[in-house]
Length: 205
Image (cartoon, rainbow, N blue to C red; front, side):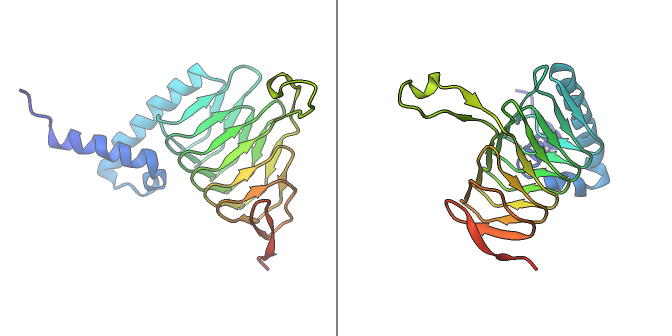
């Protein structure tokens, strides 16, 4: 039986750690940075060949994320952005620079799309759906027409873990949404919101 090189064995575990904690990618020591960059360049080239995706500089995209961008549903990803494992992204999506999308987030752009401005932080298990079904009683839900108004998240917004964002919502710059909240209405700049439905707690300033 052939023994596995301990360094290669450790490297696989290191990759696994980066998939779920991708912020560590940006502080890798030089001896790890080389293979990690090569790993990312190879995967990102594959992703851009397979899907309608544009990826900026110095990004980390976990190969364990599920990214779908057929023609007409483009995904653009800005510089220095990371997407962790087990996320599901379906375009159209416009993702800015220095954006963090942590593990198990779901972003579905519907028809109109989702826009994340620079420095948005999405904690684990955030769900953003830019579409909705009709609810008339004359037809089953699955036969109802689907609408899409889009979602926009402003600069330097932080969504806590397990936050949900409803179609049509706009969150202004530097707002914070508390863990386990459901956002059903627009949010003002620098507002701190929490609850289901989310309500104003206070302003950051």
